[in-house]
Image 1 (cartoon, rainbow, N blue to C red):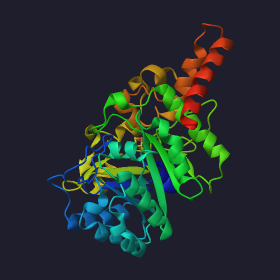
Image 2: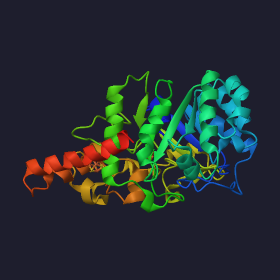
Image 3: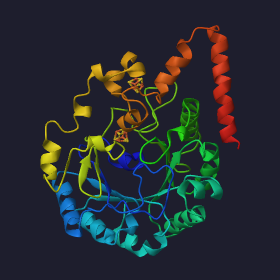
Image 4: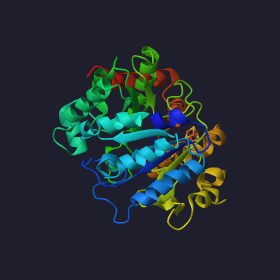
Amino acid sequence: MSSIISQIYRRIKHACAVWEITLKCNSKCIHCGSDAGKSRSDELSTKEALELVYDLYSCGYKGIALMGGEPFVRQDWYQIAKEIKKYKMKLSIVSNGLNIHNQIQKLKNLDVDCVALSLDGGKPKTHDYLRGIKGAFNKTLKAITLLKKENLPVSVITTVNRLNFNEINLIKKLLIDRKIAWQIQIAIPIGRFPRDLVISREQFYTLALFIAINIKKYTSKRLPLIGAHCFGYFSRFIPNLGLDPWIGCQAGYSVLGIQSNGNIKGCLTLSDEFIEGNIRNKSLFDILNNPRAFSYNKFFRKENLKGYCLQCDVVKECKSGCLGTSFALSYYNNPYCLRAIEDQMFKYDQPPIRWKVNSIISKYKNLYYRMFYK
Ligand code: SF4
Ligand code: SF4
């Protein structure tokens, strides 16, 4: 999930509910974590959806992010969005931008707080291939320009995998000086994304350096850039890139995930084994207040740990990083962790440390330059 959205509401209990209002989608992204395409057969009706908005408000949620699938393909999305605004909650919408030109007036009427569009390539060929739609790149760029022209708050989310890793700097060039918030996250093997397209740990570290260097290089006005929750943790050299300070996974705490059929999870990044209940069988209040709900988070136990996290000196504060990433890649043994990568680099004692450090620095420098100057 989405750090841009959670940055708005972070560390407030029951801050942001991320709601997949439909699984139907007009894109066919190869990295789709929800394996979206067709609607679920049992999606919430309009009446149920409007009641859920009220329940979220009653349970203290400060904001709701609508996503899909593609949220704009659900016929009653505007009714749901209006209801959210009626209760003065923050409204974010995550979209692929393909048909946004038809929704501009509605978005203006709503006084929407954030429209986040996905941009996954710096070249048309890459973005179109990853999204499975010819012409998607140009449509998304047009959508960004249109939203900016209409003074609507637009941000961009880039999901990085092995196919677009080398185009990050091209995407940066498309966004810089346009006052567009940019969130970078890594694609993880959930939904239909294949494990062999997950970036390597070297690429992960290089990407973190890219984010850190660009945050330092540009003011937040020129390039408001952040890393998602997957970018951490407790690096000895790189500042926090997402949740700052990192206080552990927010699933079930400041973040909530809702599937289009009313299933409730701590976060939509978590697999279906983490469904805590369904609002058709139990009230949202009861699901949230079940003492056993979100137990992976509240009752985080050291005996569950393995590998890097088990030996880690900051495991109590970190709680194994992003649980969605951790579970998808290897249960409680987060190999995509800056501290773990650094520990592994610098504890290796042969050849002598100076050579080792030099060779590691040049390895990462090369990777970084390849990406940076592509
Ligand atoms: S090794 Fe595990 S516990 Fe330690 S910082 Fe990394 S993710 Fe967190
Ligand atoms: S699983 Fe936790 S850390 Fe990861 S995106 Fe969800 S809330 Fe954030």
